[in-house]
Length: 406
Image (cartoon, rainbow, N blue to C red; front, side, top):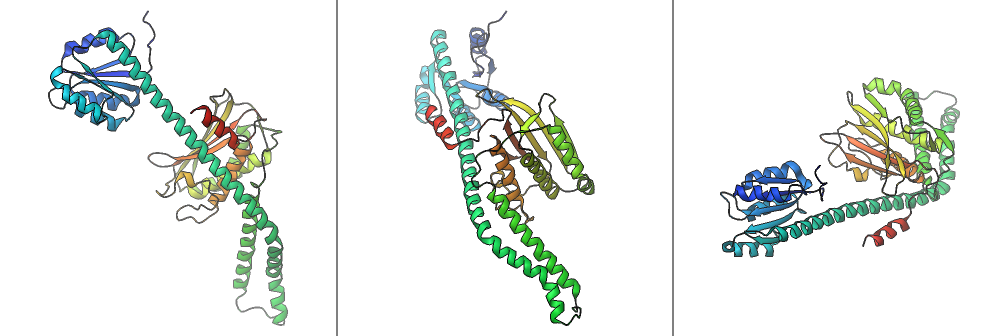
């Protein structure tokens, strides 16, 4: 029975001397996953095939065709974190020094290399590679946390503004609405009961004005929902399948009219969810409204969900909404939860509606994210802890994590 590998990362050794390659593989093959190549071109293909799985490149300097230093330069562009070691003869000493000084290699070794020394060097190199990968992962996590903090802060600030506007504009909108409602009757009185020459114009204008007042009030209300809310009571039981079935039935006519295909795949292991039913249902209603508005005939919509455990050991239900719609290049996912964002060529309330979805997840202790799919489409990821007592993430959590990772 072979012993377990010491590292999850692979090693690539490139040398035109096949005996050296086989000797290296014989010594280290039981401890590490080893790839070998007799020239730089084959070595580079192996790097492309396995990507970041390969954490260490050892290469001879003098080989037919591309040299070791040139291979390291190409490898650095492919994977900047890849640890690169140059194996040289004494006559290549200056090339090794130049490679180290230019940052193209981690260190160099003389031929013939000593197995005991190489054992220490390999362990050091792969530990260093692991540290680089972990640092990159933590930086990405912190960047995501900062982004969520900024989004939450922006939404909260806009909510406070909207709450104030709602208070001050309510009376003004009431007066405007009363005037619009009474205008047709007053017009008839002023003209002695005679019908206007173009009654359809006045009727249409009244309807448009009323709908715009309702839209303004709706926008202000949705923005104000985020003002001072810190959490939602998650006392309502619901099944995700039940909610989605209700949404599909509600929008069946619109889905059919546009010829949209919808596929739902929910992990049966997902339990009954504890949510704020009104807000949770509203979130899915807004998602369906926006997807139907955006998608074109023949596009498809896939909704899936599964249980995932985070680094702290907490179980989350993670819900994915993926579509095949064509998104303009300037429609960046980072903007999708901005309340004043509108899609290219579609000046609607997309940003406000997606902000409401973001707030709903935030107040359930979870998060909402979006990203483009290749070759086309959008993915919205909604994550919510199963434990209903989880509080929304606070700024202090980020700084505590930041300090602990320094």
